[in-house]
Image (cartoon, rainbow, N blue to C red; front, side, top):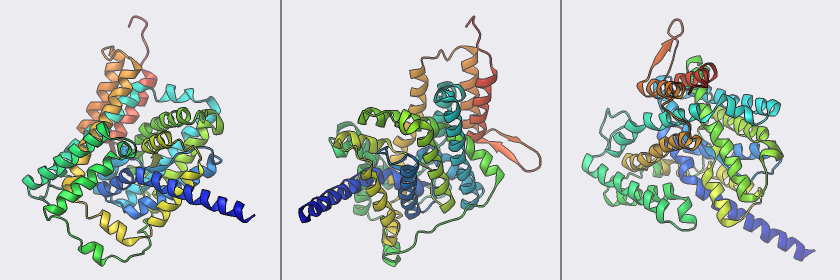
Length: 415
């Protein structure tokens, strides 16, 4: 009996270490979103862990995925925080999670093919491209040592460019030539390298870390309802909903199990949606399934979903380390800017790739109209008034118009 207990303890310890490793893979991207958007990184850690546990409950603990901060929402969060403040922006993010729940209901009723009808590549591709392109000025401003809007200089330009381009170069090299675990953490590698160079150049201050308590409650924030924020952010859920489908297909391929059938795409999307709404109710960024962690599962051949339970527990535990959040916020602006150049470029390329893989003729009048309207209205910041002071614009408006145009514009046989 003692031997059996000892064996169980060893297995639990091994699982805990593997779970910590999975969190390490996700860590760079997980904390990058709150650091860019003004949300609290400790809250993001807590909601990533709690969201993954909620996802496991809804999917009956069958799918080995980890949920954490979604890049697709960076642009609308930055705009929302600047326009309405954090609490009101969070109300839009809660609603975005409920869009997943609605889509999960449609999939349960009509099957996964309903996504292809409502959200085909001709809509999703340009929406994702626009999300990446609209953020380009923010990335460039930060890489040059300025605030995201370019209104103030935080680091001298020459110093900032050296740090940002070095961070960018390390990230690219890690993604191209990295082996094993290093290949899965290019963002973390780039941030670490840029941070070390920043230390050498004397632009990092540890005063906030020294002043911060060792252990502290994360700074949870409750949402405040704002219908403008809701209608602005809700359409952005289109992109990560499709990405979720791709991630579930990917983890199914890696593990040799069909998770689209069991527990079902409707359950995985429901879990993702409820995790996103829960995160937003606490002041965290929306959650999404992490491709990096799927890559780590493929590399380590550890297919046990319990590993993600340990990763979640580690994330929740770290959320209460006050000095960790303060340390993360010491990462200089140019380091983030360098990473963002590649990150937002990658988002744009993902959208382009969706169009390329669909093999659609973009010069057909119907396709040209849909893609053209989505990209130009989204990039140009078009907004439409809906009575009084209420307006809808940006990516939200572009996404809705894309869906409507796809549903109403007829396919012509002569094309």
